[in-house]
Image (cartoon, rainbow, N blue to C red; front, side, top):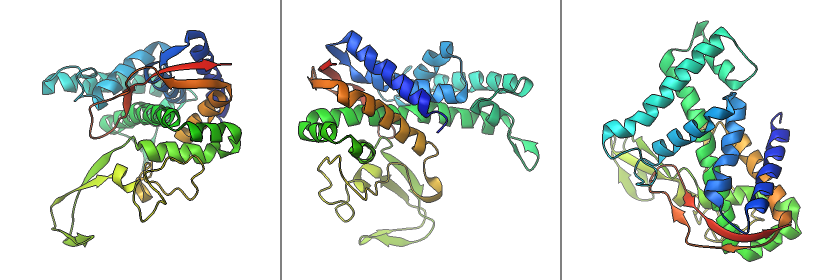
Length: 294
């Protein structure tokens, strides 16, 4: 809630930037990537001068299989992004322990469990998951949502005519995009799922994109519907594994599309959208659009 004003301000800035740079842009690289990046880095308290480095590290981590995003092809080259991120946040931890400030970085750096501070690996891991997952998944949902609206002009018109649908539309964009594609788990006991036997010790692939199109849960699951109610998607996980940043992601998307949609007179594809090469986390890496804004 404290960040809502910042989200709204950034939404205006990025939509204004679209208007100034139009009539064409790559919506992913010029808007969807940077808007949530600014939000999560503001929350952490990272200097704006370092935003670019953290963006590069994130893209290299999640795009390690993508020739355009990867640092290199060897395991050593691919590991450099994670190593550099850990070194950066180790230094940030030391700084925030010596001079605490009013930001999430200080909260993590000075956190304790049973009176003892977090060890270095735990501390840096919290930073890494917040800095990386905290904006990459949101950027994928924003760009995927924009692509869906372009592909379904009737739903864009419906949302423009009824802005009160925005909370439902945001949930549908997240369901439709499913930025976290899968998790692997290991069966701890013999079981059976839908008639398929699974033995103890076997690996199980949890396909969230499939779950979000489960015909037993969603009416017409392959229809993009900005007014979909009772949207029980699993994009944020489930139970104790529910996404830490779900409220922030929803707020960011609501602020951005609430600013963008009323100002959008027209929009269409200006090229072929491109997906990042990933089976884990990601979405569109390029979304060329042609548009007019008021």
